[in-house]
Length: 340
Picture 1 (tube, rainbow, N blue to C red):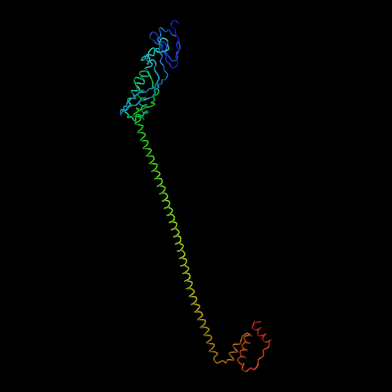
Picture 2 (cartoon, one colour; picture 1 turned 180 degrees about the horizontal axis):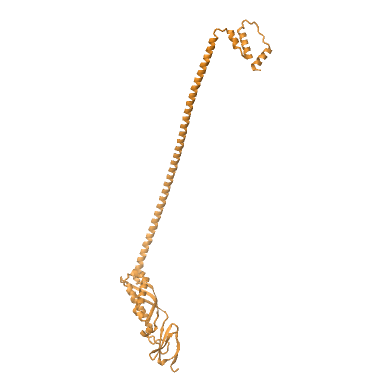
């Protein structure tokens, strides 16, 4: 009514109210009444905005690739961008009076395209397909240093490259090459596995042979030790036998000396006895036999005397006609013989 309207914006929208060419009111999330015929409203969105992009470029080896990604930006200086682009609301206050706000995202994509082309022109296809992270870092650095972005009062919050793809023909060729490489690697892995199995089997055989050699060496050492022990025992036994023989020889030598000494003593005793007998015989050469017999009977036992008596009777048996011996006499003689 009468041109008076009400407007209310979100906190993510920076609103500027111009009246008679001057800013009357500005800020985020404002709500107020205004007179439409004499008022211009500029609404600048300051929230972050995601901008997807996809474009084709050529690598250093003249291969076509498509780059797909997304950038996130926000407006940091609403007044500055409002002076460069037309963010004026239409008379109804529900839309923009021009298409400049829609061109802002395309300007950012164009800058990203230029920076990405600069990076891809230095990379061959294989490196470009694998170097998305490096490309993102370099392009993000270029966006921060871009004069156009700074002049528009914008800030790029994030940048990501989702995919870098070659043309279908090139992709199939790369897939075939990669497939052949994988097959070669698989063959090499099979060969390496077989070779490893052969090497392990050879190592096992060598270990078994080394074990057998070590066992035989231990057996030989044990036999040598046993032989050395037997040799030492034999040497000890030989030494004992030698010592025993020496002891026996010494004993025999002493026995020999003892026998010689005994023989010498016996000879000396025999000589002494022979000398005594000879001296006695010389002394008794002129003595009568009866006298000698009487001297010999001195100190004899009764049984010896009886025996001498019977001997004399036997010597005169031719002169004795008859000899009677009573049992009592025989009993006495037996008693004498038994020493009673």
